[in-house]
Length: 486
View 1: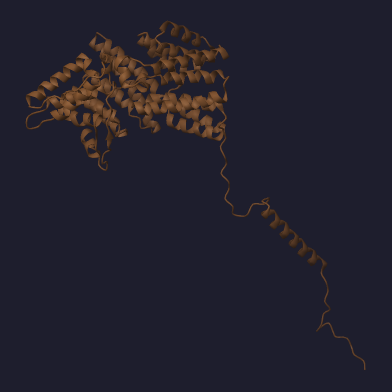
View 2 (view 1 turned 60 degrees about the vertical axis):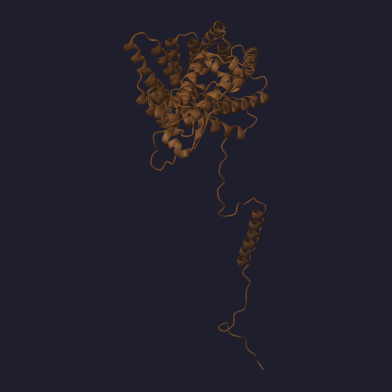
């Protein structure tokens, strides 16, 4: 029997396609390679977020320089802190941070805030000195930081200042600062900053002739013309010699180099005000006061442009208006300062003094209470003359009795006694204030003693007996000066 093969119409013999097999093998091998690469981290997984680039230390340092020159001191400090976080072994950045921290203390209005900032600066420069013990500039800046830390109102106790204008802590810091300046010059006798900062230390040691010699040497250096620090220190030396006009000229040179540093305007304005205060011609004095206000207002404008809420320029404006007898304008500017820093007890004290000078004794009491005893949020609004809508006020912690706050205590006690009547008697608080002042030894000052005796006499007339205390130690007349604002 013959069987014929199937026709291809119904059956096709299977055939192998070599190209298809090759393509499949490539896909399999590629998949294995891809999975292995992802597992080993050689290939990034899809849709992974892009990593944020890390900024370099130079980038932060340049930002710090730019912010300092622009006058935004807090932003400069932040940038330098980031720089040392990235490169903690960089002594130059630590030194720059210390320099800016020290200058920034001039813009703070209370002793605790200034002391905290200067302590931070000392910590920064100590780290720089540890990292670079033979760097002349590091030693020069350390001399500068130590000198600014040698502030009697910050490092001396009230008991020490009661018997002398300084204390061992100040003398020790100035001695160490001088040693640092000498060390910086030994390492590099051409270091302009070292010469300038040494001159500043010598002024604080009351060695004015030597200070003038060193700052003049600094001015002879080629780079002096472009260093703000040199012109600032020269102005400081001239101030100490009573040459206020020349000091203003040097501050103006410093301002040309760093036109947005507000503390330079504040010092120049203070020199104009000092000239006005000593002027024998009323018309000339008014013109000088106007120049003073221009500098303070320029500082306020710079802060406003930078978004810096700094109350110091307004306090300086207020002090100038107070000297011209325009107490209304003075009060408005102190209140403006309180808008920026509503918890600052010292500023309430200044407002109370302005009210007292303008014979607004009733208004002086709540402001001085906030300064001396502290006050609640609601009381702070009353002291400020009212808070804006939505502002519930700020609780204020009172200032301890010290040579810097004595004036507030004296005026507060005197006003309380003066306004006491049988039906509205403030004498209990007034006599308590006087007792604290007497216990601190401040009654040895004849002006203070007279105010206390006058107040106690008034209180005796309304039937309140003075509190008997024991004097601890005498004070000098210098103790009457409150915290200074340029």
